[in-house]
Image 1 (cartoon, rainbow, N blue to C red):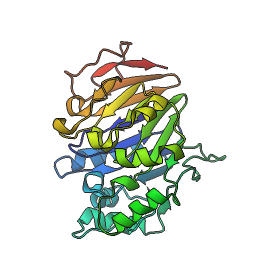
Image 2 (tube, rainbow, N blue to C red):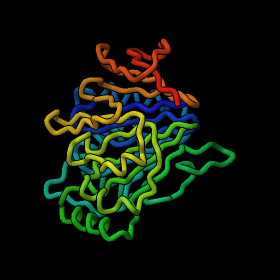
Image 3 (spheres, rainbow, N blue to C red):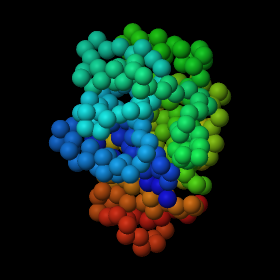
Length: 291
C-alpha cells in the first residue's frame, strides 16, 4: 500500500508519495507562511520511518519552489532531483537561490529519459525501488536544448519539466510539471507514452498546458486531476473523469494492488464516477476506483 497526496497550495504544485517501499518522495513545493508549519510537519511525520527521502523539482518557477529554503532547513534534503540546467533569473528570489544551491551541489541527481538510480527505480537487498521512471527529457533533443538556452537567458523554465511516471503495484500516475502544449506537439514522437490511471494535468490544468488529444488517447487516464489555476484559464478535459483541486482541496490517493481509495479536503465535494466502498481511513472519502 502506498499513498499519493496532492496538496492544495493555491496557484502552485506540491505532492508527496509515501511509497510501499522504504522510500518517501516530495515533488515540488509551494509553501507560504500561513501553511508552512502544517505542511512541513506533515512531511516530517509521514517520512519519519522511511530510510530514503528525496525531493524532485520539476522546474524553478516560484509556484513550484516557494518555501524551498524553509523546507530544506526543517526537513533537510539529502537527495535533490532536477533536470540539469543553468536557469537564471533577473531578480532571483530566496527560493530560486536555494534551488540553484541544491541543483549545483553534490546532493543533485539529474533526470533524463530512462535514467536509473538506486533506489529511484532500482532495488537491492537493502530496500525496494520507489517505482519512479523518467519518460522525458532526451537531453540531446534539439527542441529541449533550445529550451535550456532560453532558461539560461532568464526565460520561462516551464518546458524543462521532466515527465515522471510512478508505478505502485498495478497503479500508474503521471506528472508533467508545467510542460506546454507547443513543446509536447514537437517532441511527442520521442516519448514512450503508456496508459496511466491518474494524470496530473500539466501547468495546473491551464489551456496552455493542454495535453494533445493523440497523447491523451494513448494515456487513456481514468482520472485527470486539474490543478488550481484561475478557472478562466483552465481546460476541464471534458471527455475524461476529473477531480478539480480548486473545489476538492487536498487529494489523497490511497493505493492498493488494484484499487485506489480517494479522499479530499472539502467535505462537500463529490464525483459520480467512483464506487462507494464505505472507506474511513481518512476524512472525506469520495469513492474508490477499481482497476
